[in-house]
Length: 158
Image (cartoon, rainbow, N blue to C red; front, side, top):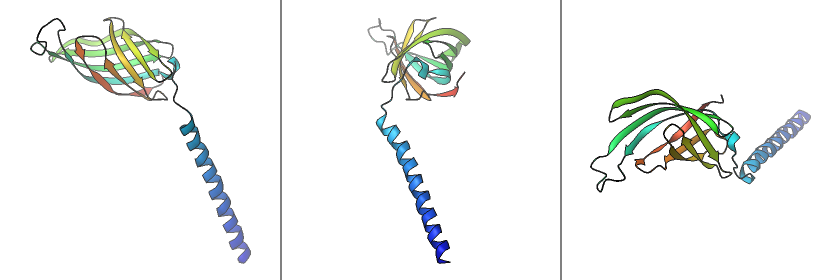
C-alpha cells in the first residue's frame, strides 16, 4: 500500500510539473512576442455596421444640416491589400444603396494599424487590427463624416 501511495505521489508530481511547464511556455510566448501585422493578417470576411453623422465641411454652421448615415455589411479582405465591401446604406432612414458591391484597397502596418480606401467613393478609414486578425475597428478619416465602426468580427477566413 505504501508503494502505491509513493507511485501515486510521484505520478501526480510529474503531471503537475509537466502541466506547469506547458502553461508557462504558452504564457511566455504571448508575453515576449510583440504583435506584428502584415497584409496577410486580414484575410476573410468581417461583419460591420454602425451610424455615421455627415457634416457639410463648407457650411459655417455644419451642425444645422447634419444627416445620419447608417451602414451594414461586410468587408472581404484577400490578404494582399485588395478586397470587396458589400454594404447597405440608409440616409436619414431612406435606403440609398442596397447590397452595394465595391472594391477596396487596404494597408497594414507592423503595429497592426492601417487604412482602408473605398474605391467607389474615395472614402478613407483608419484601421486598427487585433494581433491575429480576429477583429478590427475603423474610424472615418474623410472630412465631412464622423464615424467609428466596430469592433468588426471575422466570421470567415474566405
